[in-house]
Length: 246
Ligand code: OAD
Ligand code: ZN
Image (cartoon, rainbow, N blue to C red; front, side):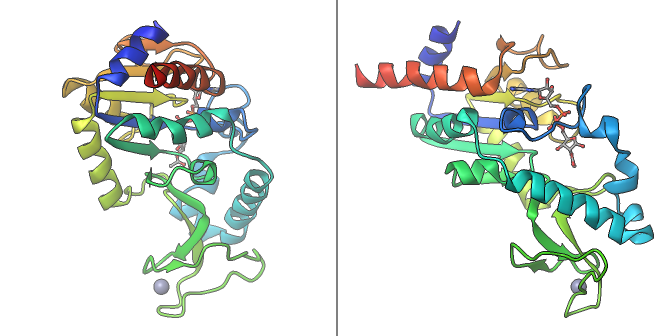
């Protein structure tokens, strides 16, 4: 099955990938859903909403500082590196991620479409002005925007918020153009990101899913690999490289 997929990729020029928390699981970043998931331990509406930030910004910042620290201690895994390499096998390629953990960039991917923002960036909660990356926030003394006085918040998408319009528009355009579309390590339940594989498939793409557990996409996928992305993607890469060297 993997050989067949490698052959298809070799004959395609336009590829796109959607990743979710599962791609970073092997790096040690907890996923959101499932037994060990973050949302089993924490209540999203108390941490990842504008209402929560207005009510208790210090608690929200404590949670994001904790996640920043956690993510800061981990490294990209072979899945992230393989996706960086995969780009070479297409003329046009898009790496779309729901993750805010920055690990695709750390692995070397250059053109990453971050649908849900980036946990290392801050922005104004009122006027959305972006602040330089790497600004540490003290929950007891949250800085305010120089322009409007709004409290500074992490530049991530919270529940009930719109996704950055230019990013989601480009992601949908890429999904429509893709001849092969990968859905990797996402439960495929949170829209609009979860619509991307469906849009790609409807527009004629070969749909590939990599996830140890079945999702609503699995039965629609042309190739479903119930495997860990950090193991499966390097295998695919090896096959592609063998083909390229022949
Ligand atoms: P989820 O936690 O919903 O799903 C993670 C998926 O990764 C599950 O389907 C797992 O089976 C799979 N998985 C686990 N280990 C894996 C591995 N080694 N290789 C491949 N897959 C593996 O995370 P997302 O789908 O990313 O939104 O969640 C989507 C959004 O919901 C997140 O971006 C976040 C959350 O609320 C916001 O914060 C806006
Ligand atoms: Zn402002």
